[in-house]
Image (cartoon, rainbow, N blue to C red; front, top):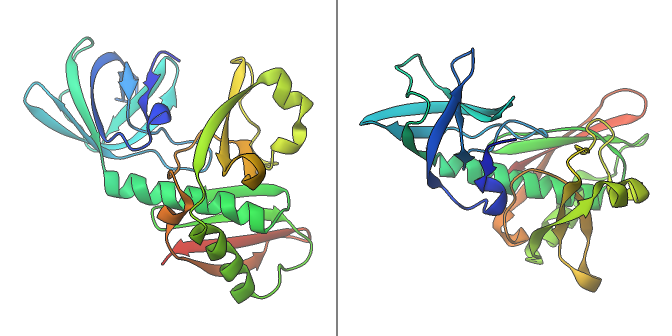
Length: 238
């Protein structure tokens, strides 16, 4: 990928200068560096604006494309030429809610230590599907266990592991439906707490808050049966 992933280095970065390095056939703008997170791993792409040449262009989302990350205009408009400088800014309120929900889902996978068969993130809610033959018990108990982890104000950080090391430690991979991207030589890990207090470590390319207390109060929603062995657990920001 030729796009520098600024959101990966700093999930709290909301704006940055960039340059247009290509156009997609569908009308996307490939940028040389991106604060926009592209749709992937169950997390929606960021929305926001792109300022170029005195024009303010609303951006609906961002996608991974051949050659990098493309920003997708919200409506048809004149396109900046390749090589044009621009300034990008994300909708921070929406992104931050995605970060809070994403971290909450990692914590949910700690409270319910079952293989994850699917997941989805939205601005105020999210869900995980678990390979879990029996219901997880009282919703109130599950909700309290999750919020207790949040209130511990644990650190959330990232690290990297080589492809070979990940293959030698398959227990790090919780998701059955989405496998970590191999072939680049290394894979990003997201860690909750560290040392003897560590409670979670798993491959993830998404954006997260720095401390679990930032997630805030969480409410557990419906717990649905999705087949003989599958349970869907939904949560939302309070």
